[in-house]
Length: 444
Image (cartoon, rainbow, N blue to C red; front, side):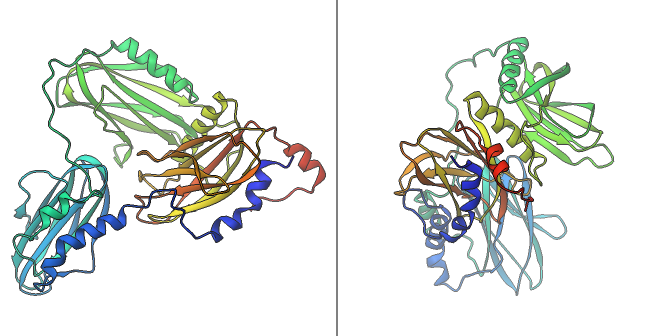
């Protein structure tokens, strides 16, 4: 039986030559969003309004924001339309003059916002967009000769399924259930991380915080290792966040977790011995908390060139997850993912085994959504992981020997980037037998 790696590598050229799009996978919603925006602006275009050729796109995670400067091409009025896509719950828009004064601001957060400001030729403005709730891509369009109100904007956005939805108001159902005590939460988390290859490192750091207060701790991390840090809140804590910053000389954000939960887990790698700052923030509730560190075991397989940081973490966790199901990693290969597109990689699967396939983004991708599917020789979808997130993983046990297609989709990426494709199987590895019958080959 030929090795799975030989089958995969031998068919890579076919992956880049297949250009047709199968209807079994959902198409990207970028076209739907563009259609909604065009529908909202069609009547205004007839009134001499012009969409300037420099729309701004940004991927934001609440409560992050982005600024874009613009200048008026002539005396007149310019409108700014900001639309949040997919998982956006609320965004806010404000327009600042060059001296810092607010020219206009949205009344309340929504999934889209429109503002108009007027001035002289060459006058500069700064559009400030903040993701108040949710995460996802935000598109900002500058509109020249725009009116104070866009006719039909509300109807077009209400009918658009490509944009986000406002988070519903909370319903009063009584007091929030009391969370588990700290020692119980720590035990459960430690067991869960142990399945991914993490071991506790040292004793937890303990403290107590009231609502909307923060605490900063300093840690020294040995280099050439990967870590996970968890901030856990006691029974009266409703929401706790954790951020890891570099040393004080360059306080850049290394990792962060902002979910609405009693616990926050961040993962990162340290190339060299360094000091980091652990920033714990109490957003809801208050009381005792602890921060526990974990160290990640390195992969048992040879690490491919260029795998580091988040990609190394994803490779290690995928190897452990596949191993718990009796699957061994057979191949790892870099693939190039297009922006808002689709990439296909053929893989021959045998009926006498089961397969696990994972896709891990590289450092240059960020947090954009990744989807992964597997189609059979007839183009039918047999497995898929298409939920929000950027570490999809699927499992397939084929009924017959056949060529399958691994389909990676990038609905949120704004530029091409790399991802590591990991293939695991319980088919016996015959690499030693293959090596004894052929001359060694150098890595590309």
